Image (tube, rainbow over all chains, first blue to last red; front, side):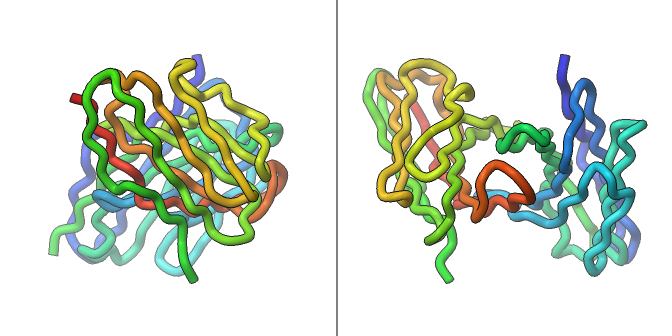
Amino acid sequence: SQKIEQNSEALNIQEGKTATLTCNYTNYSPAYLQWYRQDPGRGPVFLLLIRENEKEKRKERLKVTFDTTLKQSLFHITASQPADSATYLCALRMDSSYKLIFGSGTRLLVRP
Amino acid sequence: GAGVSQSPSNKVTEKGKDVELRCDPISGHTALYWYRQSLGQGLEFLIYFQGNSAPDKSGLPSDRFSAERTGESVSTLTIQRTQQEDSAVYLCASSLEGPSGYNEQFFGPGTRLTVL
């Protein structure tokens, strides 16, 4: 069956450390993988997109890797801040489709 | 500029009643999406509009759910004879492009539906 898995347990880290979130998928061949941030009571906000032929993408303190062999994406936040505390969702999009298929998200808590 | 807006922000209804949820996408965005998010879950795709047409309605959970879009703008999601399992946050998103290529989706704040 097709699955997207994100760690359901919250990630609790100290301010200043690097947060690493994982997104694993099975039986999909995505053309794009996106990461979104969601705060309580709000809709998701787009952060980064990485294409299947890209290994790594960076934006300020954010870094995303995409390994199509392992079927895994890692999302890193360096020099984390309490304001980074939120739920982070990964989403796949197939080349032949338009809809996003979301994981259930991982909650990140950055302690001051 | 204005983002995606949704109304109402909260809706409490009794089982068996019909509800209408509204989405105002970003002006000029041709693509519009409806998703549903249950507590602690990821987003579940419901329907996609390109212009006023809905090429894919396969995510709608049952025939009690329908949606329309007019003027390549506002969309309404209607749930008839609501059931308790319909309780969720209903999110709308819009994007500038069509189905191909990069399509960052901009989300509204959602409508929280509670069916008693």
